[in-house]
Length: 412
Image 1 (spheres, rainbow, N blue to C red):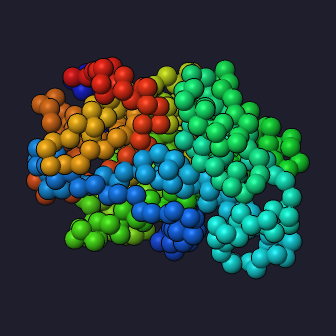
Image 2: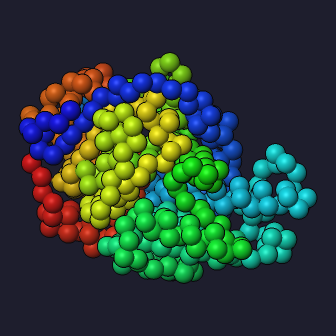
Image 3: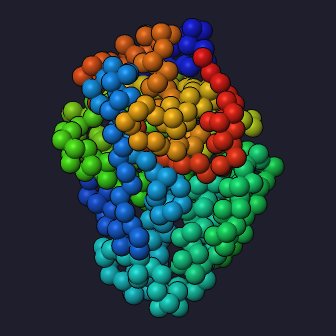
């Protein structure tokens, strides 16, 4: 519902008619997540990213527990996105090796095999194409570079020069276009289709392009599977609430799909959080049909600035997510400050604009007097245990400081 008192925060409870989403849901089974985790564990210097216990913030907010998965430590790349790109490329390479009889069908592939000179000799040269605001493209470039292959990365208009440099440093052919994200995706796909050795590695799906996006979603499953293992080790049987950010929805669909499979009839209340400038999922939930968002999609949450939903993820989200929330930039900025200047006794989390949006929403709902209706609808109370994902660190350090130090995008 839209409520002027929410100062730009808009939300809708999921009351969409249910449909058969078993095919999409099966992508995120526990078995598939374990396969992805096994591959990522084979990569040198793999380590679980921290699950941070923000116990003092939880007490202030009036909930039982608050746990946050900090992806700023992922393979030194400061974001979770490499999980999807690397796994999708590994699955693609495995498929190519199976075609030439160099790998048995159903056989997994580890990092050492993926990057071996023998694999490169058998496959020849390929070029991996994608469009990105930064984090996904850096992950694809990182994986392609280690494979000894090429990558072409297109970035939407207004992308950070710092994020562009990070991609270039991974050996990619990268540039910032004059297009919005969705049009940059279309251009990258056109370029890949015209390259005889081109492979599109995009973290969104559309009719006719679903296999690789499905693999990317499975790659993201490593993060959720780790988090569930870590919660269990902390004595938490299950979170009661999960907040997850969404651009095209690949991450949200991955998280939702895994949780639905893992917890069956006891799945947590899941809230999908989007930037209000690109809230295609919120609008789609409200209209009960896919609704794209066009224009420049201008928001500080660059990783969420996507106007067209992943069709695979949408099938999962519309059937299993509980709420869809659209938030303005000040909510993300609030989350960055709350995590970056923690209560005494809580660890500090350096969370970027897209990473901090769920924390900002939770704080705004429970730590101010303006959002009681949303908090009540979510069912947040003294018995709630909340899981958040901080999907990136300060991937643009200058912007991070302008928000956290200088107070840019102040809110309430």
